[in-house]
Length: 198
Image 1: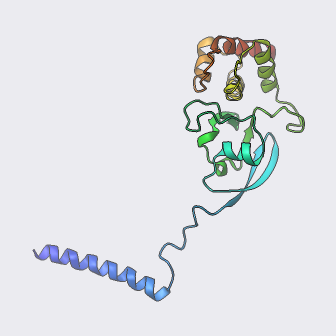
Image 2: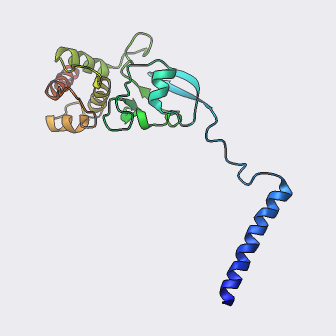
Image 3: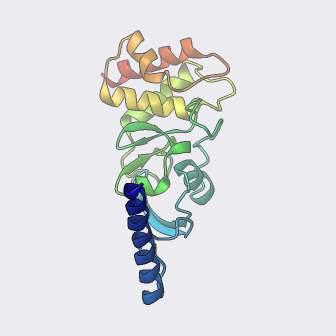
């Protein structure tokens, strides 16, 4: 019984101290925490071009790329990290841009499917160019909505493994779903791009 009373007394003292601090300083207890909803200004390097934009802290990379920078080659099919159609490269690593905070991409190199378009890269990316050419030659897309993500995943694969086997191609692209089911042609395109780059 005495132990419980002592416990209550200690808790009471703790609360009183906090309340006293708040009233004597006239400052909120959590004033060192920034507003999580306040806009922030960030600089992104996209296809070797710097962009300084003001965005919400919760803004996802796909939204900033599409809506703020106008890079609509980046698609947003599911918007919940299930289909991979929004895949872009960050430092040559494929990521789902629909669940990647734009602010997190600061200080990194972002590459989208538009990278080789006029005015984007000073020197065209050879791997991306080979993939895009092979994609057309092997009729690898039907509706095409997932294809930017698949092209970027394939580019990442060939940048890390220049001569992948069929199982390695399947593993490298398994995170990007194709509703049309052009998987055989996609594998052929990756093989053709690999051969072209050899």
